[in-house]
Amino acid sequence: MLLRACDGASSLELPALLRQLRGAFELHQEAKEQVYEAVLGVCRESNDTTTLSLLSIFRTNLMVMSNAVKSFLGSIPPDPTHLRMRFRTVSDSLRSMMDVEEKSVFPLFLRHQRLSFNFYAGAFSPAMRREGEQS
Amino acid sequence: MSERLPKDLSVLDDEWRLSAFESPLLDYTPDPELQALVSAASEASDFPIALVSLVTHRLQFFRAQVGLPPDLCAAMATDRCTSFCQFVVAGEQHLRIEDAAREPGLPEDLIQRYGIRAYVGFPLRVMGRTVGSFCVIDLKPAELEAPALVRLEALARKAEARLEELARQSPPVEGNLEAEGEAHRAWMAVAEARPLLSLSEQFSEGKISLEEFQRGLGALAGLTGSSDGT
Image 1 (cartoon, rainbow over the protein chains, first blue to last red):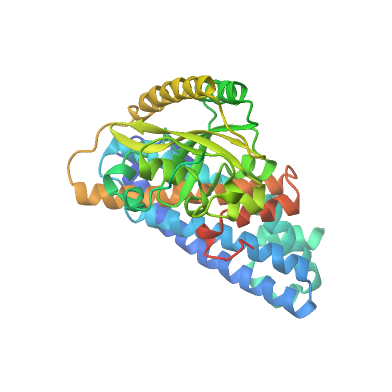
Image 2 (tube, chains in turn blue, brown):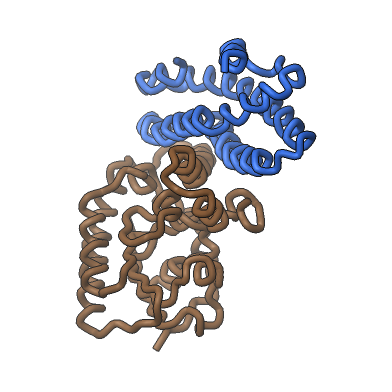
């Protein structure tokens, strides 16, 4: 929702919204990193090398992007036109990240959640947990 | 006969050169005009691959392409350090390679990974800066005759004019140059990480195989700091 607000914001509103987005994004990334750690731990324990390898690739790719996004949000272009144009790249990238996570990463998380629910259940959002319990 | 490669590549990291790259240039949205030019270049040379390749801080980014394998189509980029186009930009002149396998000094990664053998590239200049190469590539040793080279150079000039038009969509930089420089570098890091996501996205959607995914990652190993991208 915050991302959508940024997309539609005027050049004057955008810097303040991006500061909000930075805070939210950093918290979100920290939480997600904990989930990665937990799931990778389960993969190692259960010797699931395929999932381990795939998750490690996705984690690395998404981390390169999220670090770059964090730097962008911490160094907002002073010129409003540049900010607006460059933010489009960032917004597209964030959407692409969410898409990859939804299609490839979360299904891998959920597969392991069923196997070892107690190991990292606390790291999931309630919605993800419900989905995992139902499937 | 192939030509000598420039030894000094320092111009590639020149801040003024890199500041030419803004979002209209490093965009994944296909540009029909550039696309038509690369198709014409492939036809004129009879080489299967033709590119508008933009050489940035860490990548060669394919702003338009024809003939690339699925993983490069998905990523639309490789590491800069393995590219042939970096030599066109650094040397600021055209480059002809008849057989890359017999050319000392060329990076071997793309030869081994994709079987690239023949290459002809012309520099692309935007706002007075050399930003990339308009090139054709063959997977077998080959040489182009003078009429084909003349035709390719004419197409390169048209691609250059289109890139200039795109670049001028961004306003010139004014005000606090230090803050702007830092902000530009931060944005560029996002733009340069996009090939990793694009590749991941295409794999997630089942458009490329695991093998292609891994090969594409290997060609972008410099972005992730891994030796083979996996």
